[in-house]
Image: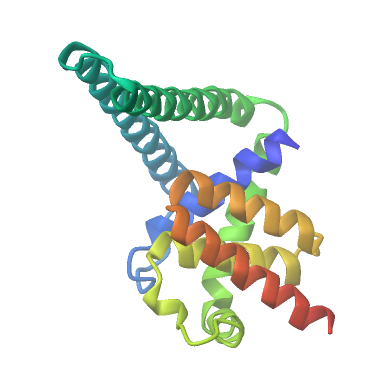
Length: 202
């Protein structure tokens, strides 16, 4: 469900507000406002990257004689720029919808859904990290970028505490990685969650 995907993304961004995870309690409204600010910043960065790709393509067109190799390079810049722009516009549409959703009758449900997952990760972090480390195969969770750590923690909490089907939690985690991580992070998250679900089901 689209609402759940947006709330899941909001939960991930709320986790990013816990800084070193040693801070005291923060009001829920403040966490939500900070998470929305992070989402807007992420979208602006994505638009900036797509603008750069399109500008590079335009510059290549102006400077080249469009020999075969140049045509391929220009097309690649255009493709990347347009793909990024499309992704950002899709997320922008969802983020613009979020304030409206939070004002509807199910406001408390959505807030509770996102905050509940963020709090569950925060409260269970030491044991969560141990279980994830157990399937890392030569790596430690702490060596990954913070956003990748939180994507993994959120997926495992959803499977363990909220009884989300493993396939759904893994797919949602990969979608979050597509937006907030890089290709290496996406592959790592996918592999770790696959090993985790295999170990749980064994």
